[in-house]
Image (tube, rainbow, N blue to C red; front, top):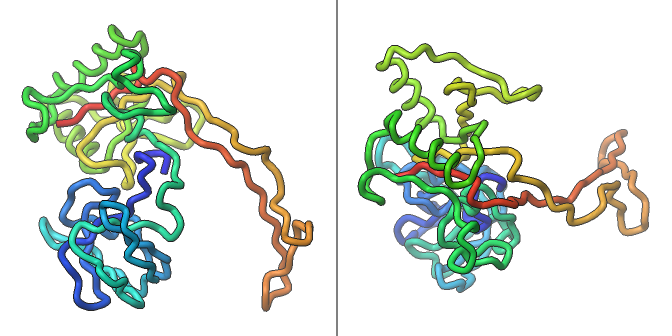
Length: 275
């Protein structure tokens, strides 16, 4: 959730299903032929909606066959096919549609309204975005492109990115790029945390399987924060107790929660490198 755009889309329906075996692709709603299984597991309760918001119905996942190769979509088998389900319908975790926070991908935009502020009205409320020579056209990752975004962030926003977030494939591409340039590829930790990534001039390139593909997000930690939506504490049951017995066991459980949302205070200080 912290990495995506708040739309809560798990995947898109690929083709019109005629049985309970639904072909899915495009995890997160981003075009991809093979990763429709990324956010979906067995026993997951799903809601399916048309792109215009029409509710198709709900179902429960009974089996998942992962996508593979370059074009084989995932197959998600459910207990019952919601009526009317068709190509490009949107798949959500049950109850999640419209209920997720905006993460890094949604923050890294030059056009979308965020926290009620439109970029067209506030110049500083656009991320720092660098594309290839032709925006929207897939181009190779190069050291020049990476350095250009870093330098643009320094001059445009006055920040120096400390972390780069990307998918594993992008991190491997950088590793190959570095080795071809006879640059030694080491790993570096982020502060005192257990996070680590490929060392790029003292910055960690951290790869995450759930990060949107074919992008690098340049992170300056000082521009981020959290909005506390409720005081942390124990979650009470209906009768007010916080401790309850797990059914069929001699064990007891209590749940503690802290309700917060990720926040960005200076959108210009967030960089994204993409095609």
